[in-house]
Image (cartoon, rainbow, N blue to C red; front, side, top):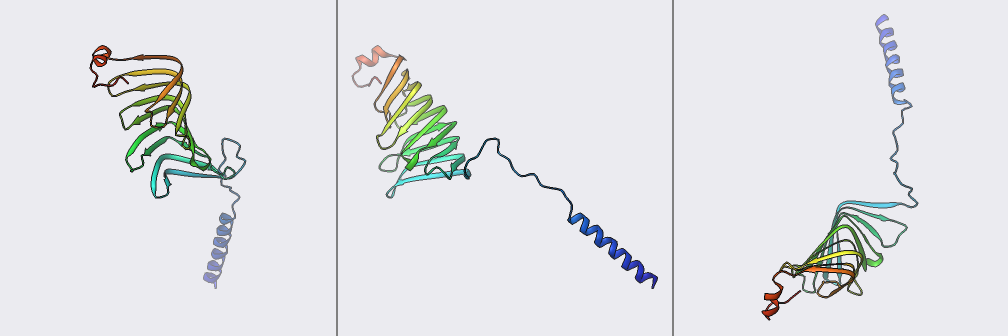
Length: 195
């Protein structure tokens, strides 16, 4: 009988200890944002976004983070930006790299900023702090300083930019300067283009 009482007593003590640890008042901390959030947000990590026109790939956007507010019907915040634009036959036309960007409503425009670097299929390199792309108008604009460098080493700089989206034609708004290596020789040799 003493053994039964001891087993019964130990069972009750173990049950009480079990229930007390299970009903502990510890609370897990809820995640808190560092900013005010007014609507739910979708967040995608290490993602790729493809944009097609009918069956043809127009552009591909790769990023470590894409963030979209559910109250906004189209804008997506992207950090960092790795954007590849394709021509009508599927060849890479332009590559865009930037610290951050926003894809606009209906995927018709995007703004990139923070150490923007662009490489075109004809070997132009474009650098700026901010550019705006308008797909429907096939235009690129900026109000910041922009530098365009060619494969031959020509460098043009200016503040503000109006360009077609493949950078085959462009103009600066102000403060234009440039360097043209071997300008005289290239001018005399009609086979070479000058910028």
